[in-house]
Length: 231
Image (cartoon, rainbow, N blue to C red; front, side, top):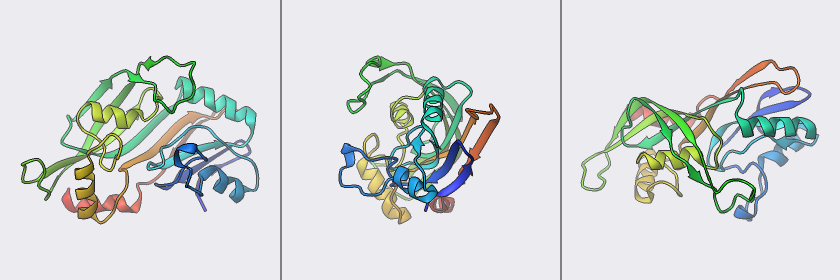
């Protein structure tokens, strides 16, 4: 069962565990478990995903409980008006204390919304929360630097945070597509746990019917405490 953070007649906010797809996709045809079907069965009614989280990402995931609300929420996530998302991630290296990443992103090949521009503006903010030094020898260095960061996407591009952190040479640990395979494997062995270290920590937006501002927070998963040893 999914952990339900909020439920009314129009919305359901849940915590998605890492490794769970939001909905069925041909990109992962062998998968049999999906958040959409799990929540539908849990509530006993149809549900519509308001946005997407990558399979490896955990955290706050929002669903609509009717098609009209789904359209309204889809427009809100598209425009970003009145909406704020914050993430936690562990990245390679020691980033600056804070910064703005302003880097346009190409539309990804599996994004079938062909009416979109091929290259779109994209902005993300980051703030470094704590820094680690791991006892891992990498690329001639006796140890490996990592950091926990707070991330805020100001636009909603596909894989935006993962691609932006790669762009500033601080890829997210465990990112098989945009990160470093040897480092990901070494960290997984050191921690005894393998995942994409990206968590959708909070989501703020106005209720699509009442207009009331809502805030949902998904606590960091238990495995996040594995990093405390190195803090």
